[in-house]
Length: 485
Image (cartoon, rainbow, N blue to C red):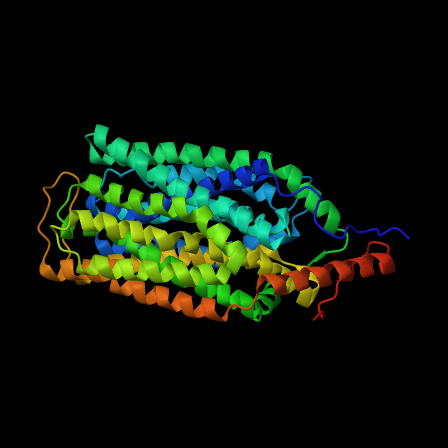
């Protein structure tokens, strides 16, 4: 009797146009995300004139909404049924509000009242992050649905990482150009925000068009035998958090991005106030970091295919830790050494882009093996929420730390101020020792991550065997069991 279910993913490998299209989709979240991380706190305190504590609290306002928004969109996207599948409707619905919400964050209302400014930026942030979740969460979940191969997922996430880093380089390069040719500081940010909003919105539409064919190929093979969970959302959370590999991925991701977002947020203050350099050195330093990370992405990808995902993280991150500590000891006259250390930060940084996201699809397969159901939306919702929490915590702690240290805020119309020694010391701690310690936590979680290439291969073989058995037994009805494994 002919086998009614194919034994593997489509015979053709994951092709270059699909990988490129999926990578382009990364621009929809990463261009706004990078601009926010690098510039928002600086913009709010030094251009809009907002108190550092209120400025750091702006993103925390969005987190109150995200506590409901992220898991709900993940849960609903898992259950969405439409001609476009489960993820694409959410990407298309969120694309335009994403651009509008992002652009509005770079306008300065005509008021100096601190609470009115706080209310404006907090309200705009709620709109932006609702759309951000709709786009970014569902785009990330596509990685588990475009291929089931361990090595192809490394390739796909390498393209995602390259476009993510490329988004940072593009946004920083664009900022460099705009800052060089526009004299009015508030107008600089309005132009930057508008251009990035348009590019991010277009990127989402291009991703949908470029990946849809491959998505339908994969879904045609497994949707008749793979069930979407109908359990209540709270019970799905309990199942997700009982998945030990997922806990490891959360630990790796949270430590990586909490550390790196803190570094990114404090970098303009470090370059401007500690090193005493003009603004353009900040963008050049950030471009050095991201350019190095981009050049290393496919190098680390090739190494990962030989030694595994976990190992490259444990090789790359210690390099970044040492470089961050070097920045702490850097003196204002050591400008060349600052750029050398930026290169070494970038060497390890690219592993933080690749490793957690390439592990997560394997975690989804492990969950299907244990439960018989797929819940990509729930897993990716939790990770996207953790990403935003990491950004919010980083910016809040940076803002709060600066405020407690006596940092002096200013507006774009005021002359540069001399910061007290306590503020300079805080800036140095936030650029080096604190993020380095947090990164060490990520290494601990990576050490315990259990899914190797061979283990994942065994999971896929058993899933294929189970699907074939259920298809033969039930004529295509995969059942709704929750007690596998």
